[in-house]
Length: 215
Image 1 (cartoon, rainbow, N blue to C red):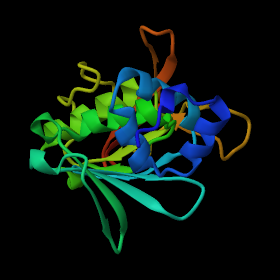
Image 2 (tube, rainbow, N blue to C red):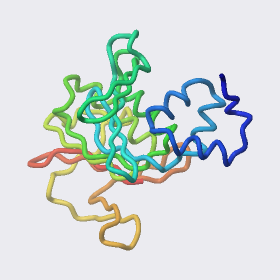
Image 3 (cartoon, one colour):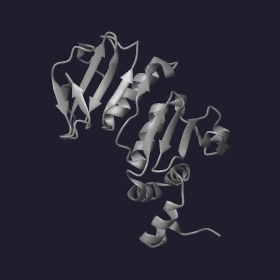
Image 4 (tube, rainbow, N blue to C red):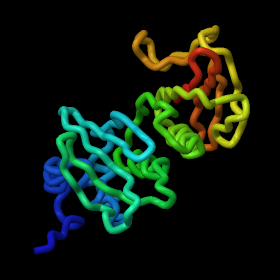
């Protein structure tokens, strides 16, 4: 028997969502604009991105369970769930198997605020890796840290050639907060985005090549 979810009292909806895992919530959010808005209003900041590869994104909550969103090349598998020894998996299809679009959807639904450490070597297609960088910056995720041997003075982030520095030769430090453990960045260049957000971007070459982004 169908349940009129959108017509239920708010506290009852919250109880139902508390019984759902993020895979189930994401499928529900994909049903319509109204269900996505409802899910977003109830689950924001309850799940974080624990790891990310060229084909999968993993979410983790306060418990030890980890949930995998996997891009599948076969449309017939879209929204199918499977269980392995590593945990539960939701199979999804995206044009050109774009993990960047999957990331954008997950951040939009779950309100994730911080990106995990990412290695470009996990991506077979470097352009897809750069697309992912742009989404991470676009969605204002804190302390983006990326390691790559392929980033050089010609690599474009945010459709611009970013300022380049030499790794391990930093001078200026920007902090968010007063605790030494709070996110910080060295030699970041200030970026003012169209939405009014102020952030700092730093790209390093040398022994430790990578990208940092602090909102």
